[in-house]
Amino acid sequence: RLLLATGSSPQGHRLAQGLGHQIEPPVPSLFTFNIADPHLHALAGVSVESAHLRLQLSEGKPLEQTGAVLITHWGLSGPAVLKLSAWGARSLHDHRYRGTLWVNWLPSSSADQIRQVLNETKTQHGKKAIATFNPLPLPRRLWHYLGDRSAIAPETRWADLSKASLNQLVQQISQSSFAIAGKSTFKDEFVTCGGIRLKEIDFKTMQSRCCPHLYCAGEILDIDGVTGGFNFQSAWTTGWIAGQSMAAATTGAAIAGASPGGSQ
Image (tube, rainbow, N blue to C red; front, side, top):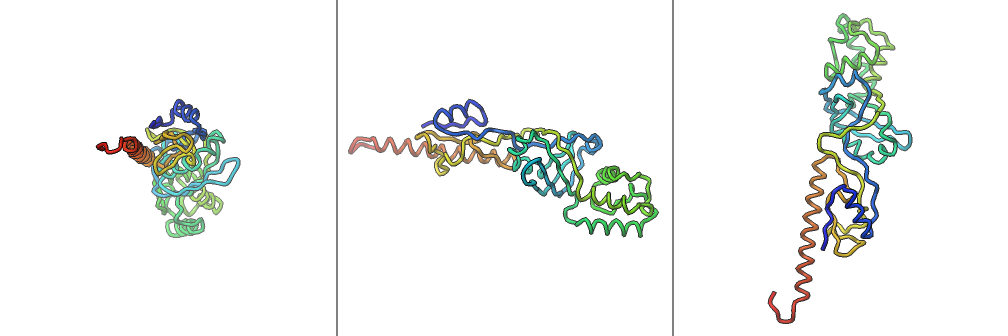
């Protein structure tokens, strides 16, 4: 019995192909998005507990995800971005990691509800500066950034905010647009999408359906989870199943080959 557990190594893929398997082309998965905006980079460390992301590539339907987002020195990261990169790993690779990302920083409120809050603020707190009085549950630095993107001067008072500027601010809060310009790895939680096609493996035993007595486990298979932890668990679980199956098969062969009346 032979176990192939070579991860994303090209040598392992060549061995599997030589033994009759087809390989889904490997591409990176679980990565963050590079965004060429130095003003955004200046917010590194700012996080939003729940944001809605919509990724549009030049072809195909948009990909969507909701969850925590972290602003970094190179762009956007966090669980929602990593999940989006996992579901769209192959499409993003095919598009050279170029696309448009729309972010709704307050998905729990509609654009009309946000507009209503801002209009009420104009009425009730007109003398206060927009930069220093934020009526929405957004981090202070992000609020300043969205104001800048809306071309609103920091010293502008709420009473002086024009209807057009208010609408622009609502737009930035509910649908900020960013051009993705590449990817980055996320610490050490970098995995590969691709590998041995899953239909070619018996998942009850992890034995190959193409080559008897060959077993496969871990990232050599076309499995990638939405976080690094799921990929560790997949490697441990498939390795355990394969080991148990190989041991059982070996014991069974030995028993079957024992001489009549012999001890076991």
